[in-house]
Amino acid sequence: METYAIRTLRSQPLRLVLTIGGVALCVVLMFFLLAVYRGVADGSVEYIRQNTTDFWVLQRNVTNILRGSSLVSLTCRETILRIPGVESASPVLLLLTTIRKGSRVRTVFLTGFDPEKGRGGPPKILEGRTVRRDDEIVLDHAFARKFKFRVGESVDLQGRSLKVVGISTGTNAFVIQYAFVTLALAQKIVGFPGIVSGFMVSAETKNQLGKVASRIQEALPGLAVYDYATFLENNIQEMKSGFLPLLYTVAAIGAVVLTVILSLLLSVNILERRKDYAILKTLGSPKGFLRRIIVVQALLISSAASLVGILVFFPLVSLIEKLSPEISTKSTPGQILGVVAAVACMSLISSSISIQKLRRIYLLEVFR
Amino acid sequence: MNTIEPMAPVVRLDNVSKVFNSNEGGTIAVQAVTLEARRGELLLLLGPSGSGKTTLLALAAGLLKPTSGRVLLFGKKIESYSAAKLQDLRANRVGFIFQTFLLIESLTVSENVEVVLRFTRKSKHEARRRAGSLLKLFHIEHLAQKFPLSLSQGEKQRVAIARAIANGAGLILADEPTGSLESKQGFDIIRLLHDYAKFEQGCVIVASHDLRLVDCADRVVRMEDGKLSAVCG
Image 1 (tube, rainbow over the protein chains, first blue to last red):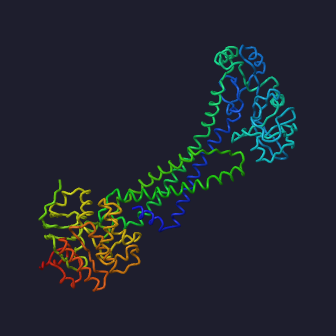
Image 2: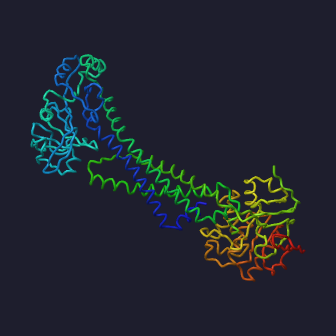
Image 3: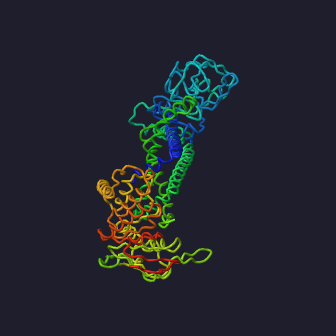
């Protein structure tokens, strides 16, 4: 049975190669979407993850910084610092703005922070150093690579000439990248010196975090207090809710295309080998015997396509990341196995669709 | 439960007719045929093309249901067999030989025989061993690993016969088995089938238009326009 299944597939080598290629492309698409999802989900919140703090304090009803806009008066900092149990409150100001280099204008997620405290700044510096003065800027490495910014060069930020002093990593949020300046400069750009987005608050001891959060909330009822884990999760969920439907849709289309390609090949094979199946039926083949031939063919193709997909995926991702550095991907063995398992399931669906063709092969066809 | 009576005729047709309906009306393929075939005999259905021989074979094998009349296969009415039982019967007790051999071209000679043995849940090893001994019996063991396309017509028909009897079929239905063969090869094949009927107590029904086969048959039934016109022997 396996011999027949394999030889039938091999009898049309070009068709087999095209089918494996088509299915492999779908496999690569699914690998890629999952890798992008993981890369985005992790990369976009890396800034928050790396800037460990006990609380994020933001404007009320703003749950995240990725797709939320929070404006808080800087005077709240004094109130927070007076609360028993609070060690520090570092202000950050986040805004979307553009950087100009020559005639090119690019959007960044500008983050103003207090360089003396360091909190809220770039989580990791790849090259150069962090900002110290108001005329300096740190750019994300994907942004810098894509738009060919180098340490030591000057960029124009809202009419101000800033020197690129460092390149950071963990600051690529896929659709936008972080850039870091001093809080003072960020406030000047906004035009309201007394405004920040929120505060990163540290408690003196970790064993009374709940009480400290309650005290902040009581003192500043117009603000929202999130512990580190909740705030991180809020941001992850925000990215997921924004990206997942799109990724799922494209992945679902990939899965449907895969199923269609496979069903088509299996059905064509059945129709071409109609006589063989009619002979086998007439000679007394049990139904399961013929069905297994189709299932084996489907699994062989999907296995080969998965293998090709794996072999193609990693070099392809390296190439894509070179060409589009802002696309950060992350693949795990679990993801790869998950896709391979999903492809196997879809191949079974394809085979069950194609198996319907067997019903329309009649015993008497052998006498024609 | 479908138990099979040991002494009953292998195939019995009682006043069987078959009409194929189409848009242009009904075509009577077989008309009021009464016939039986027993173990140990080679029955020759003789008649020109379109006389209804193949339809009669299909009726005898349970591949077709009669429009009227009654078909008994191994002593039981064909209607009493479920589809699964009929399939099981074809796998275990009925062998087919076709004019164009109908070997599976992507399988080797040995695999063509093995495949029907696998239908009866024989292990791969057992199927291979049995196929080997059958090929030896027909003096074609040297062709075991060849593909049907590289065989002569006579060799192909020997493989087809080996396949037909692989499961010890009690009934062999051969549709124009010599039609694609030279006369000597044709006689050899009929002789093989006759020997099988005689020595293995099988029932062989051969449908043919070749008058030269008459001498090799135990009984001859002439068919014309779907009716039996004469029974000899």
